[in-house]
Length: 229
Image 1 (cartoon, rainbow, N blue to C red):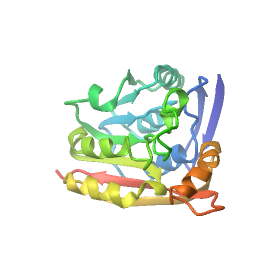
Image 2: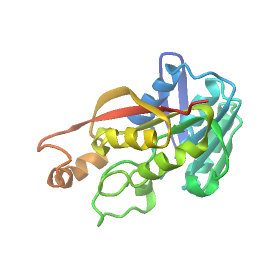
Image 3: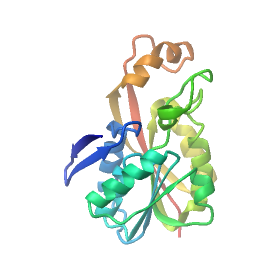
Image 4: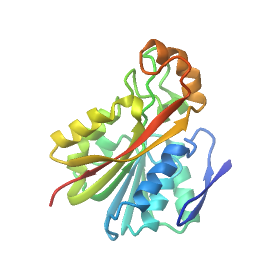
């Protein structure tokens, strides 16, 4: 079991992590930063999709959520989230399974999502720890489902923050969210260096036309979606 620590403008967060659970990286902290600057009113029901270590669930509680639900397909991630939320004194309902299947009919005032979004060849295995990042050859295998589901997950007046790579076509995310009658915009962009997975996939990404030869950085984007009252 390892630990990860993040220090932001307003808080410090230390998390434990069971081997095999997605390690909080630039995308997690960028989403927490966007949440801290969002002006989303406290007191509502929050949902963390693809919770991993539970970092976003802890952040949602710290920023005033009345209740927090966290969902992940990984059993280890659910256990890790429960441990971290307990360590931080955060009550959470952590459930295992696919967000579409487990959350049908529920409504939330805040949705935070750091879904798998790394483009990868269809021949690459999407099992085991790869489930936390493998998202099909366009990187949108989960994003497209999330955009379709989000209008049904948000309560009127609710807001969502989604982080993903600029390689996954943020304009498609915006268009799909707007097609669902949500107001959507990019609120944060940040260039970050490739991590180990992206470095390993770089030759295929060049062949697929997703990056330039020699490219070793990508843009992360945080997209906000609001459901009108």
